[in-house]
Image (cartoon, rainbow, N blue to C red; front, side, top):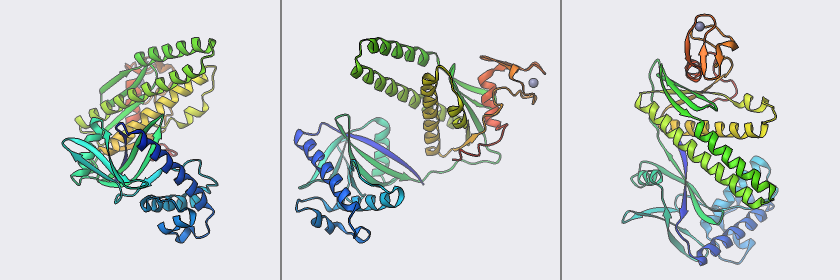
Length: 357
Ligand SMILES: [Zn+2]
């Protein structure tokens, strides 16, 4: 069983609705904090809300909040909820489709409402899958981000795992000059890092200018814009990589476990590197996520020697010089990242012992 979360934006909710959503969140947060200290929490039912307040509040949300508070109290000893968004279970939250448009309905303070949602193409595919019974709906949350209101709908579904013995393996090397190189045997797919480097230099240059002028708000906006752009780029790359794997009948994807590398690198350019590492991490996450949904296995390998080992078995740091790989022992010549991705596919230093999927 796999799970995904669809974040659907509510299409232009009226001012009245927005202020009601805000009020619901406020009441729910205060109620959750009251519940934290409530002695009867373990056996509480939706009726418990009347002990807290005389105001009307949907029992569907109360039930979900009781469940959340119970599990948070047990797992992380929550002392206080800064904010608890209203949640619904699958019986109280419904997705509907009318004339090709999608809407959601859920209970609010005084009545059930239906709200149209903004749907991207891939989200429509998931909602159609849900409506046709190909996925099961789990819990939903109503939340706000930068002034826009969304519902996060959890879906779970069966995935048919692709298998073969031995499996067909794709190795992916992730880096800077090439954002990613994916190899299946000797067939490779390249994603150049030139554009990303260029765009990020421009973002940085603009922020330096703004920094001199102390325009903090504009700097923050620029940072958000950059990370949005990077996220979109990573989504596109990961989509293409997983499609490439599917087109070529791959069963298993291998990537390097970069966790150790990420924490040990210290340099003057550390800030920049951290952002790179963060982007690399995000790209791996997206690949892993899309691969699993498609029924592909994912494994992480120990990154040791993947970039300096030749197919003849000789390991030497002089084998690699920037983009090119030239074995000092046998003379084998290759693109450095292609060579690395092939070594990753082979897991030459074994599987990661820390990052296990
Ligand atoms: Zn060699």
